[in-house]
Length: 79
Image 1 (tube, helix red, strand yellow):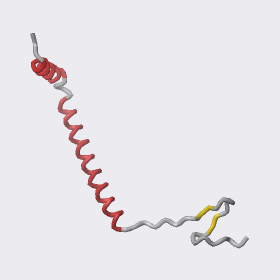
Image 2: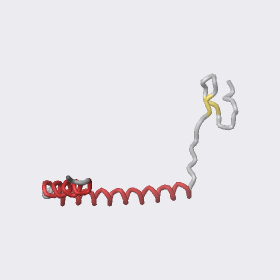
Image 3: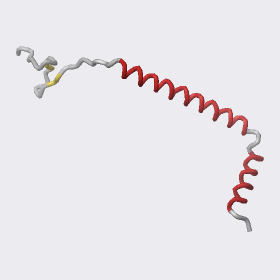
Image 4: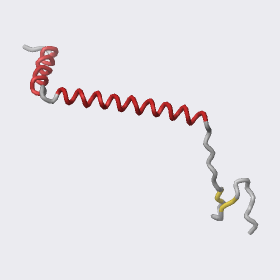
């Protein structure tokens, strides 16, 4: 009777008729989401380029098995 392509076309027409009121709102929100995604992607790319240009140094302490902090060069605290 009906093939798959005819059924898809009828379904799309029914959805378009029933969702005619919401269609402009949906396309507007989809466009807004795409702009936000693009802006975030550009910011992330710029941040990655900025991070690779300047290395970040993190100071820390080495903790031994006894639980006392040790200087970074491996020296003991004199106890």
